[in-house]
Amino acid sequence: MKAPKRSLITFLAVGIVITFSSVSFADGDRGDMKVLKEAASALEQTHPDLSSSLTKIVEREEQEHKKEGAREEQMIKLYQDAAAALGETQPVLAEGLTKLVNEEIQESTEDEEEVGEKEELEGKADKEMKKRSVAKLKLLKDSAEALQESHPAIAEGLTKIVNRKTKWMGMKITAEQAKTIAQKSVNLEEVGAITDVDLENENGIFVYSVQFTKDDIETDVKINAETGKVVKIESDKDEMGEEEEER
Image (cartoon, rainbow, N blue to C red; front, side, top):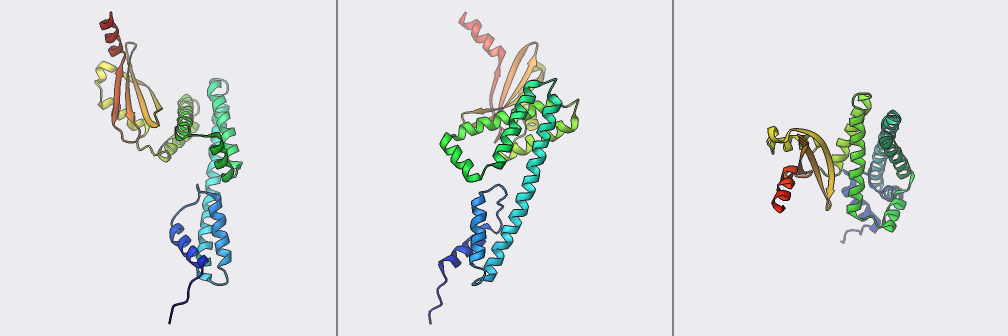
């Protein structure tokens, strides 16, 4: 006797449960959540076990989504506090943070499908997205440094966001780790102390630029933010030497 055939929706539901039972949708497509709800509803009478499993996934992800929303609100509040604290002393940074707040609010209120269509219409390439991400991280880092003495709590909050976003972007190396790597790759007596650390996007690759200064001579150590390898070491001495040879 042949085993009864399962309906197509049953197979689809089983696939959904197996695939997504351990996956978080907190940062995913809201359309996926809608599919899960519809599948759970369609299976409620004929396959209550599958329907129950899907419903549990939906409930879990809705809770995660609420938590993510709360984190976003806290982050925006921190940006606003930082902008207010920098208003008089660092107007350029304050203006940048205010623009960032407006962008975050706009993105949080847009439907994800609309965002995807918008990005596609605007033709945002991966490199362009990385450039924007680097610019945001630099803004947050500079703001944290500017607030270190006057508003240490805000500075600490911004630094935590920078570190979290750095990991999210796939960078395994933090700015502090880049400093350590750079210091080990040069003679500190010759190059002096670290005066600046920037995250740059070179042809789609994230690179930390660690700058040393001594006697007005700058040495720049570039480190791959994903691997921690030293990519290049450049110094004003080298450029001065080349100019003398040309003469």
